[in-house]
Image (cartoon, rainbow, N blue to C red; front, side, top):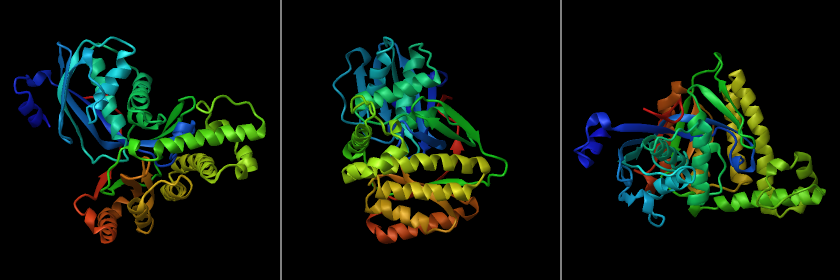
Length: 391
């Protein structure tokens, strides 16, 4: 990466180049419930987004990407209309950070991600890199919670995605060999260390070969359905409620859902059923991790994946096939869609002693069903890692 940076900016002394990094993340259990203020779990991965940069005293943003074509080039004080390409993420970071403090110094640099885009929260990772870099050159001190909130605001308000704080929290708070257990309602969290009895395990990422952005899927519709379901259930029960926009399924007790679920339209009932069952699965997954029971953790992940297919109704034929292949592969303890699950990738935890045969078997079965994706499908071996930081 440094070689590419030097070719783009040959007059930059090496000692002046700065480096920030944010990992990708996976959520073992806790799918699609962070935006409903549920409990979630997460690992940061030992792959992520790197940004090499230097400050520009003129306030110019001048960025290139190793993964995408084009350039982000504009004065920070007269930011142009929202880019349609990857450059909109640095614009989103400027939008969020400049609401707190005036930015006068820009950055010039090169950004790259180490895995294909889709399902690992690469958007949150790149936003965190831009926020850390812009704060650095402008002399702004940000706490971990500041970073999480700013990245959330950037993606929610500027990009327009109705997400929760799972992605940013995992990528900032996680630590190697720990499971993040996060309450997205009050942002309290615990980092649970892997017990000495926990067998070693791989975190495998299987890319379907299909890419997507969440703005092109049913993601926002699903979150709206959850809010309407919560609002309706509270109304049926005669409980106090506010606006639909402010209502979350966390506000609804499971007993209220069971009492009134048949009154909901089928899609809303399914979304609420997924939330209630996934909330319970998170608690069981945390207990399994604390015991070092990787096989039970895996079984809970498979159950989460099935609910995502049946109740959340995400996935596509290729992604569902990947899930089914993982479930039938010896040595894989558990797995599910990673991220929203409409396209992108699946995550699995597996026996490292059977790594090669697992990777070979999954790839062979998948490409037998979808030969047109050869060259686009890929598999990657990962492990847990620390969160975002300056290197």
